[in-house]
Every structure is written in C-alpha cells, then in structure tokens.
Length: 320
Ligand SMILES: NC(=O)c1ccc[n+]([C@@H]2O[C@H](COP(=O)([O-])OP(=O)(O)OC[C@H]3O[C@@H](n4cnc5c(N)ncnc54)[C@H](OP(=O)(O)O)[C@@H]3O)[C@@H](O)[C@H]2O)c1
Image 1 (cartoon, protein in one colour):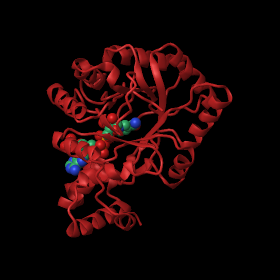
Image 2: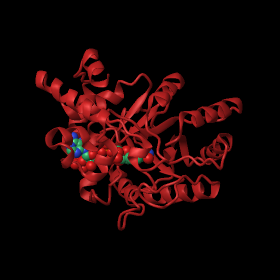
Image 3: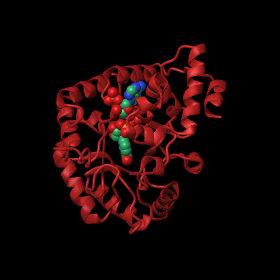
Image 4: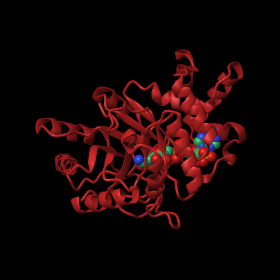
C-alpha cells in the first residue's frame, strides 16, 4: 500500500491543481493548498503539461505547487505529477513514452517542483509504440534512480494495465500502483470529451477495476460542476466545453433524479460527487479540482466525518 515518505496513510481526496499558477493565481493557489492540507488532505495532483495551452502556462502548475509546499513538510505530502505527453495542448494530446521524453519530462518536473523525488509519477497517456513490458522496465529503472517512489498510468485501458501488471509480476518488478481516468457521477466518453486519447469509466473498465482491485484516481469527478449548474440554469447556463462533455441524456436523468431527491431531503451536491467515487467497490481517490475554497472545505468536512447522505435505495434510483 502506498504511503507518504514519512509513512502516513494517504487521504482519499487529492487536490487537483490543473489551473494553479494560471487561472488560479499564486496567492489563491497557496490558500487552497493550505486549506486542503490543514483539513487533513495529503495528496497533490499536478502534471508537466498544466497548463501549457494557456499563455505563460508552461510548467505553471508544477512551479506553483512547488512554491505552495515550501512551508509544509515535504515527506508528509504525497506528490503526484505526470509526464509523457506530446506538447500539443488541451484536448489535442497524445502519449510519447520514449525513454528520452520521459527522462526529460521527469527532470523538468523535479526542477519546477523544486524537489528531488516524485511520490507518484504518472504516465499521462498511453503510447502503443511500446509494449506494456517495455514500459514497466523503464519505470522500474526510474524508481531505482530514486527520483520516483511509485508509478501510475493515466488514460490507459484496463486491458493494457493488466498486461503491465502480469509482466511486472512475472519478472519480479514493481507494478503499476494506480490508474487515473475520468470517473464520476457525470458520465462521459472520449467522443464527448473531444479527445480519443482519454479513457473514461464505463461498464467494462469498472468490472476490470473491481477484479484487479487497483486504486483508481478519479479526475473530472465533479463533472466540472455540471449537475449544480444544469439544475440551476439548464443547458444554456453551461460553458460550451462542459456542455459538450456532460450534457447528455444519461446525465440529465441523473440530474433530474438528484433534484427530486433534493426536494425530499437535504444534502450537499458537492459532497455527493465525492461520496459517489469513494463508495466504489475498488480503492478510489477523488481528485478535487477547481478554485472554490468553500467547496473544498465542504468536501474535506464530508470526508473527515465519513458523511453518508444517500441510502442505497437513493443511489439505485439515481443510477438506474
Ligand atoms: N489525468 C488526466 O488526464 C486529467 C484530466 C483532467 C483533470 N485531471 C486532474 O483532475 C483534477 C480535477 O479535474 P477537473 O478540474 O478537470 O474537473 P472537476 O474537478 O470535475 O471540475 C472542476 C471545475 O468545475 C467547477 N465546479 C465544480 N463543482 C462546481 C459546482 N458545484 N458549481 C459550479 N462549478 C463547479 C469548478 O469551478 P470553480 O473553479 O469555481 O471551483 C472548476 O472549474 C485536475 O485539477 C487535475 O489535477 C487529470
């Protein structure tokens, strides 16, 4: 089981930092990080490419995260970053898992984060030019160098993960520790997302994770606020990007049912998003994105007191 370097168990809410240093300024980023860490969180999620599609965005999230962590104890924080992506920009990305590219990305990440190790190094996309075994070998070499403690894969299919796990097991090597994909109450597909290199949770993947019992880090797990925004203002209130990804028949039904339940009982919609992911039948981590300190506090409070807002019957109704 993964822990911080100081041996502490990991919180199941991770702080997402996609727009740290760009859409979310340095001061506000520091406030979000301090609030999150102060409320018992200890996992931070960033990436080399955040947010290189914005002006002055190259490396901005990692640099800002590095700064935010200066006043905290590094060994108590489980820091994850990602590399291995072609620098084409938002929704135009492809994996590049050549050893040279990963090496360059990792070195750039360590410099930007101002640290000498990454706790969990993610391969941001898959790259089918390499066999799963070749990738496992490469990641083990990085771990041996002491610069990464664990490695994970993002936007890989469960089938490729299974191949990598089998290879690692057969060769006595460190295997993949976690998978990061789009997963949450808001259902999405790569086509809705507009990028076929992403992987979204679906029935087949869900069953595979249940069988593998591999930790899943759920990104865009709040569906970018879809349910709240849609319930307040309908489709026209959504920004075009969120509308394209989430304003689908299945999510509208879920939204309507949330509204119906909300008329009968009081609940926090923000916490529902986390409650859904955390009640998965496999180990799951909710990556908490955005800029709202209030929502962050509400979700961390729900996590602290293990809030259960809905009954099994309620969930069956929403999800049926
Ligand atoms: N591995 C990957 O390929 C990948 C891809 C995407 C993201 N990620 C990671 O996952 C993290 C989270 O993903 P994300 O930011 O794409 O998605 P998200 O957490 O689903 O959405 C965050 C966005 O939704 C808004 N939002 C959330 N709840 C809301 C509500 N109740 N009402 C109104 N707006 C609401 C936030 O607004 P405010 O700004 O107002 O809070 C923010 O703009 C990222 O920071 C990143 O670390 C990984």
